[in-house]
Structure formats: structure tokens, C-alpha cells
Image (spheres, rainbow, N blue to C red):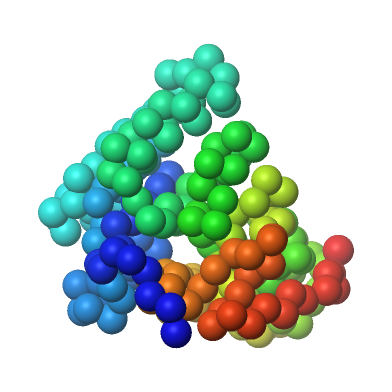
Amino acid sequence: MTHQATSPLPVVVLISGSGSNLQAIIDAAQRQEIDIEIKAVISNRPAVAGLERAQRAGIETYVVDHTQFADRRSFDTALAQVIDRHQPGLVILAGFMRILTQEFVEHYLGRMLNIHPSLLPNFQGLNTHQRAIDAGVSEHGVSVHFVTPELDGGPVVRRASVPVLPNDSADTLAARVLKQEHRIYPEAVGLFAAGRLKLQDNVAQLDGQPIAQLPRTAE
Ligand code: GAR
């Protein structure tokens, strides 16, 4: 097994809202289940609950408000400046609801993870829970993936499934999925920090072996 040169691994977390995934990662780090140090939490929206969660944990917080920038490129440049100040080995997108420029994604290629509330490659994009219900699938879930220039299209590193129940609303289904998010995101981050998870030639590898991707089955 290879190990990351830096221990604990410095990470930066990007959020846009409630930050419950951020909280799960903070908790796992505090319990020393994963070997990371969260150097900064950055939100593109001011006054969100996730910023308070970070402050309560004694983590530096920043707001880079996308509404203050003329275009995507200038926002991404400002964001990257704040991130790079902390020299992270990993950038964690945790409910960060912005589409990123190709340049930004390439700058962090192989060291940026995202969590997406569907069994990718199914239901890329928004409103995943309602779309899963509308499509009549019996299984839904969540995926953690490396971020590549294709939106929600990077190689998946961890997945968890939940059943879709007959009386589910988007909210009840989202709550079932969120529980799994809080389990698998810290796990995936821990694997990366241990040097076990890598992106090699656009293929996700765990312990040097390619991680199997699923075919698209819905929509
Ligand atoms: C989570 O369900 C996450 O999977 C989703 O936003 C929520 C954020 O919750 N992310 C996306 O939809 C990304 N396209 P949180 O702020 O409580 O972690």
C-alpha cells in the first residue's frame, strides 16, 4: 500500500449550503477515523449553515460569492486563489452547487472529489430524487467520484444504494440517501488520504486495481 507524503493530508472543503456532509467529514477526522486536516471551508453563498459548522469546529472559513463576479472564469480564478493558499492535497466538493470551468477542474485533476445524490451514471444534474421516482426505478443512491471536465461524469470511487419505496416523496428519498452520503463520503476521503485511491489515465483505482463503473440503466 502506498502512502500520501503528507500526514495528516491537508484538505479544503467547498460548500454551498447546510454542510451535513462537511459535518460527517469533520466528525470522522475528529474521531481520527480518517487522516486529514481541514485547512479551510469555502462557501459560494454567504451565511449558510455549513459555515457555522466549520466555525464551531475551529476551521477557517471563507466566502467567495459567485454573484460578485462577472463570469465563471473570474469566479473560478478567485476561488482557486483562496484554495491554493492552503496547499491542499485534496479538494472536497460537499454540496457545492456551481458548475466549474474546465481550467479549474484540470488544475485539481486527480485531487478533487464530489458527492452526487444518484447512482451515477444515472441522473446526472439536478433534482435527482424526483427524477428517480418519476423514472420508476426500485433502487437509487449516492456516488462519490473524481471530478473531471464532464459534469457529474468523472470516475466513481464509492457508491451506496437505497430502495425507492412505494410512498416515497423526493424528501423522504433524499433523507434515506443522505444517511448513506454521511457514511461513504468520509470513507472515500479516508481512502484517498491513505494513498489507496487514485485517478490514473481517467480511471479510478483502489489499491492499484481499477474500480468498476456501472452502465447507465435509467432515463
Ligand atoms: C447532498 O445531498 C449532496 O449530495 C448534494 O447536495 C447535498 C448537500 O447537502 N450535491 C449535489 O447535488 C451536487 N450536484 P449538505 O450541504 O448537507 O452536505
